[in-house]
Length: 99
Image 1 (tube, rainbow, N blue to C red):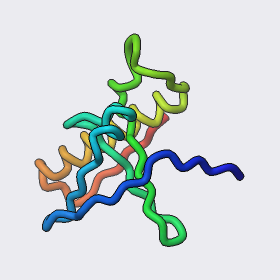
Image 2: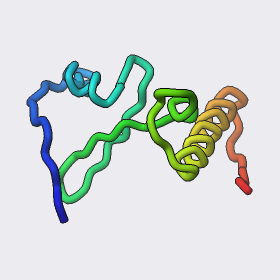
Image 3: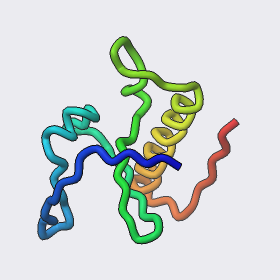
């Protein structure tokens, strides 16, 4: 397995648990104010990865995306909207099936 290590930097954690992604990395990975990132813990190490939403994957200059990326983005966005609706309507439970 080949692991490439690009940039390593040290950042501080704010009182509410927030960390600031350095400008060079935000620019490199096109992370803006409304971007979402995924935090993963594996074997005592924390990994951060930009999440692509459905709209990031559309249009010219948006980067490359597979059909699977598009499908997963649409499912993830639909799930967020349903959870928001559940909270607004005070529903105890609901079910959804994707086909």
